[in-house]
View 1 (cartoon, rainbow, N blue to C red):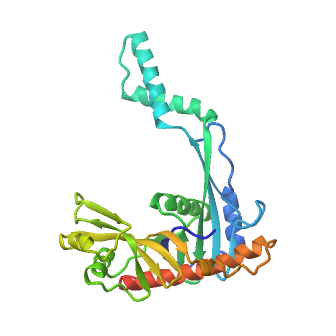
View 2 (view 1 turned 90 degrees about the horizontal axis):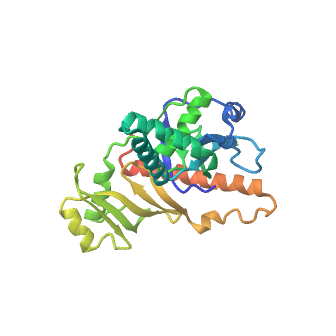
Amino acid sequence: MWFKNIRAYRLTSPFTLSPEQLGEQLAQRGFEPCAKSQALALGWVPPLGSEDGELVHAAAGRLLVKLKREEKILPSTVVREMLDEKVEEIEAGQGRKVYRKERLNLKDEIVQDCLPRAFSRSSAMYAYIDTRTNWVFVDAASATRAEELLNLLRECIGSFPVLLPQVNNAPVAVMTNWLLHRNLPQDFELGQECELREPGEEGGVVRCRGVDLLSEEVETHLHAGKQVARISLGWDERLQLVLAEDLCLRRLKFADELMKENEDIAEGDEAARLDADFALMTDAIGSLQARVLALFGGEAE
């Protein structure tokens, strides 16, 4: 349940639904497995405890939800080979050319025919709404996956207005300055990974791993005009992360000391342990989010 990524969204108006009301709304789209001819299934499942638990877990004004995703695995190479065989058969047997529109129709027929026999792959994604601070935190590195969850929330509750956070100082410029002038904030420490990019859509990209980020090699790239688009950091001895220019926090790794704080909870009481871990995690995420915004001059009006 410990988040591996943080993609944060600012609620533009207070979230007023109670946990019970939100749970009732989400129940409209409880998870149901893919039907035989269905390529993708999305739905809500209980975030804590048993399968018949509540769809919303509430603690200290934070509402935790969990989206389950099931998709049929149908390799594109298999579909393409079957399509090529079908097109060749038609062209040879009927002495005519198969054009694009017909190819697309044939492809759809092949996909529908194969779906019932395809394997399924399942995954889950957590998110929580902090009703006290008007933030939504989604455990997703991909913007597309995060939007999938947000869109289903909107479908269930009718309106869910959120925006990506905007800051006063450009993250790329600030992160580049950290390395060029060796002035990383005191509560952060450098990791051994960064991504450097030349300005412009066609600019080159250099990815550094396992290196000293204050080394002459990295400094040379910076003096040549490259800028820091992504950097690995440690924060306050509480967790490690990769901070990106889009303010997404990836590959979170919470400190062992933090994750062990609830070890004294009885092993048999899994629900209590998960609840306590959720409280620890959300406190850390809330503090980190506020600190990250401060690094870049605070939220823009």
